Length: 65
Image 1 (cartoon, helix red, strand yellow):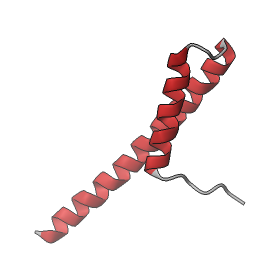
Image 2 (spheres, rainbow, N blue to C red):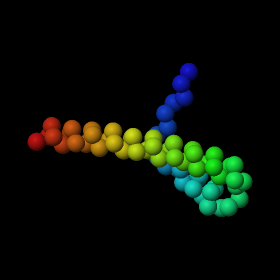
Image 3 (cartoon, rainbow, N blue to C red):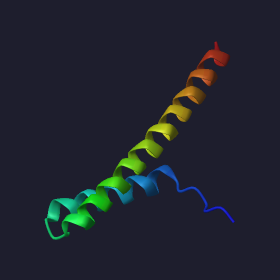
C-alpha cells in the first residue's frame, strides 16, 4: 500500500524541523547529509504542490472572466 501523501503544511513543518536540526550543529556529518537530502526532496515536493495550486488558480481566474 502506498504511503499517503502529506499535506503542504505538514511538509513545511518537516522542512523547518530539518533546517533546525542542521542549524543546531548537533548532527553527525552523515546525519546532516541525510537531513539535507530529505530537505531537498521536500522542497521539490512543495514546489510541485505550489505549481499545481498556481495552475488551478489560473484556470479558475480564466473561467471567471
